[in-house]
Figure 1 (tube, rainbow, N blue to C red):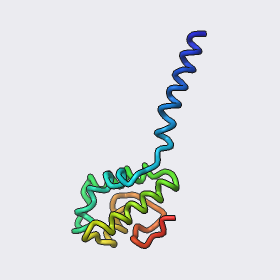
Figure 2: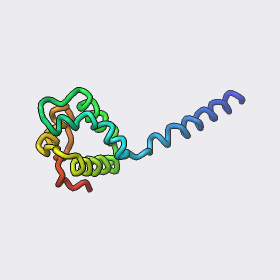
Figure 3: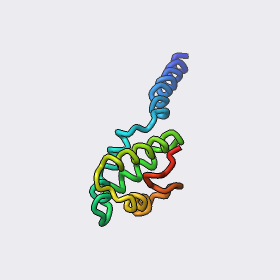
Length: 113
């Protein structure tokens, strides 16, 4: 009986720990951290550095829900407007350069809804 109580307690503890992580929404801070390595490439061209592509792939994995993808879209659009010298064509092609397939075009005019 004590073993069953211990197992039930562990399951409950796991649910309390895992559930908040599973429902945590993506933030602009997370988007910025994942894409910070891309700024120089987006301004000057060349080849995206490994840190950039790793961030793009991580961001793609993190943006699982529609809400997360909308947040990422809006955060990237805001960043593109506030960081000077971002080349929209380089931004549009970045996912492909990093081996990431997304179902929409990266653009300041993309409807994030």
